[in-house]
Amino acid sequence: MPGRVVLATHNPHKVEEFQAIVAATRPDLEVVGYDGPEPVEDGVTFAQNALIKARAAAAHTGLPALADDSGICVDVLGGAPGVFSAYWAGHAKDASANLNLLLDQLSDIRDPHRTARFVSTIALVVPGDAGRESVVEGVWPGRLATRPSGSGGFGYDPIFIPDEQPTDTERTVGEWSADEKNAASHRSRAFAALAPLLTRL
Image (cartoon, rainbow, N blue to C red; front, side):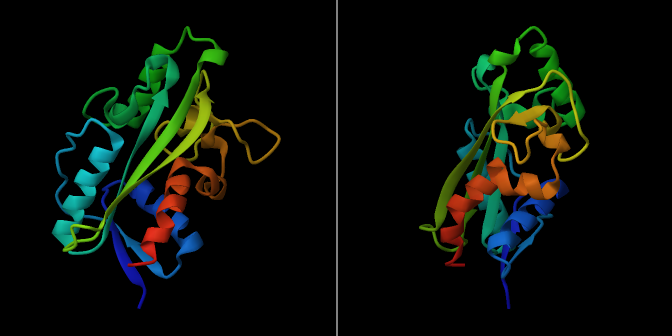
């Protein structure tokens, strides 16, 4: 029987992405989605919010829980949107509105100053064992395009140009394949740090 871990998100894109990332290194570990109540994410850091979600999912399901809190951090904005990435244009969590607002705020910023990074913080909480809480982080550096390009991925992917590219052609993540993204993304980098801890599940 494979091990089972619940991913504390209602975002189907994140579930699919995590399933693909985990399958590459832990095919024996089944990642299932979470359909329980969403906790109030009142932390002020990625790590705090990831732990809030993982603790809630572990308590609700009785399963080991993973939670990712992630976002885009723009240097010229002092690291914003950061933890507010999903709500940048309001609590409707409208990905298109968030992206367009960020582009508008950067409309006068020249390319050399459009540096940014995707950050993923993953928390692992094993229920019934207070000593089994872990937090890891993955960072994916790059810069922001002046307009969206590509229909792949989700969120801010169509305007994020990673520093390292899988081909000679410079592209936004929206133009990458799912396999390319899963091999290089901030979540895959965070998961690489988390993988040794999952051997105990």
